[in-house]
Image (cartoon, rainbow, N blue to C red):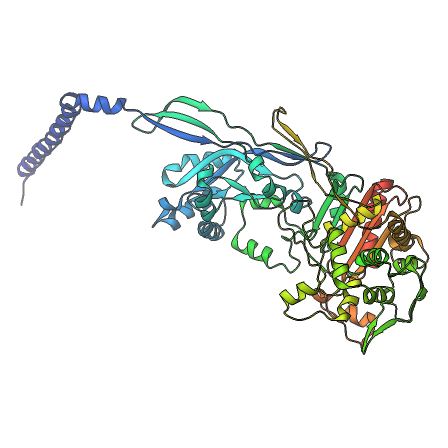
Length: 607
């Protein structure tokens, strides 16, 4: 049994050995201190004094976009944005993303899904969050040591006060992709940049983006900024001033809400656009921060195609094309305004029967009544008389089959078919019956709403075919450098003013006459001229009533509805073109929308 004295001796020995160990480590620390402070003093002193110089790009504020009254349509605001560099997350993505989700107070699984989706599309750093509030920034800064690859950047951010209403006209920006950066790196783009993707943002990308500035920073050996050595200020992008009336644009968007279609409003005096709306439309602001994979899938799979600018897409124009057919026949001397043609409700060409929309027929009709009542039989006769190549050449001279001149990206110039087109595209000869179909705006014929509105503007102003334009002025932010845009007459309609006047009478009667198809656009104190159009998408079966056909047919197979008008008829101020995709009849679907627009414009009403 160990007595008390033995225990004391053991304890004393342990104390002595502990002292030796402590003294040993003390000697090591002392030697290290002597090594650093005395033996290697000069080396570490030089290391501490070493400086590195780095250049940091300073983003340029993107040029702003305004309406004709100076209302902001696209601007910039300061934003704290969160970037993640996947390079630093290798092997520990889950751990870092879980911590980040906690700090952002978000669901981890959704955050990870978004990160992986953007990682596949990005090059280098990923913009994960934008517009962070100060409290969130403070939380992230406090835990930055545990978040490698995280970067918080204060930079100007694009925003759109009316993101949906102007989506297709103004367009949107989104982060640059990996493939684009490889292609554009020599032009000064980097992984944090945004590109104009559609509309004016894309068309004027070079003018809007500005020029980046640069900071030259001096850092010490520990990466701390010592001072700013040099600075080159960024040059903001140029500002765009449009011809658009933003209040009118927003009202038009409201009138189209819930429908798929487009509206174009322009001045027949100079070709300036007052509104260009396509519906439905997503919010342009959403593209700045990006979508989750689920959100993007829902957007691109939407059967009403919200990303598509329907004002620039080619569709069968239906009866809105009949004034072109009428003018071509008048010019060729194949008909005169007073000639009456009998409509029994159909027209026979050989063994084929071409039916008029009015089954019981219109009786005897001359040019004005044929336009007002949209008699198909009258225009079947003109189609048979006209040579298709002559009609096609005349239509091209009226602005169809080629870009409208507006310049917005993604425009479909449409199709004006003739013998050569059918031989090249379909490999078959032209048939006489096809003349009749094209004469009423069907068949292979396709036009877009801007082209059609441009043509009706020429009818309204006496024959001047004006290039439509939407940008009135391009100016630097200080106002010193400016470029003005304005009217440009491309050509005149290849027909006499007298014939144009006769067609205008038919368009006035179409809205104001007792049997006119466009009476839904009639106003009390303003004389409106216009033309309806119903473009068949699929051929309807004969054994069903019209109501059964309309009720039973799938949405995507229903007729397109058109209406184009100008007012006041005696001295037109505006042209209004309305297209309702799968809307049914021009008189019941498109003309009422045009009527509301005209009432708002002239009478200040907002029904």
